[in-house]
Length: 169
Image (tube, rainbow, N blue to C red; front, side, top):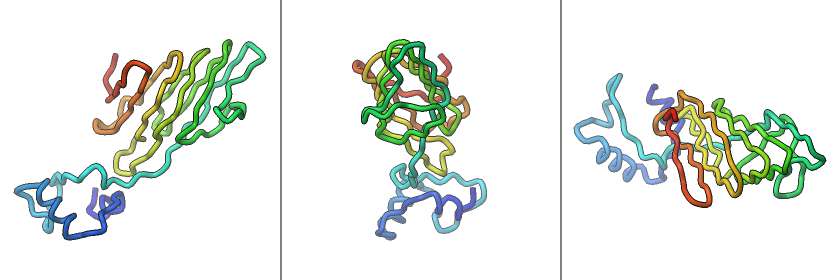
């Protein structure tokens, strides 16, 4: 990355003197004002610019009369885009497949209720920040295997929170 592309992917604090001081503290032994090609620069994670990410319904099949719906009562449809905060309810006899922008897939079987708590994209990470809450039922995951090591994919269940970082199970 060039310094220009890195800066464009950041949301810097308003106080530039404090920001420079923090960078010097995080990168001891490196001159922040005279960066070299190939040099690693540590940047606070909360400085990374975040944009809204979306999930697309890429598979929907039902054998019964009830259809999957969102918490506001709208019926779920094939190729529908879902945003952060959406809650999906899958009735008996239905299956729903969701596709994230990095190619990761979520499979929701009958009886699943899932809330998309955080769906953000950080331009420097090339992978979305995902935090989902499985409120009821089961969830199948096929996580994109080339996700950067520091990109987050968290699943909260009624009993545990699991973080996935490209590990194969």
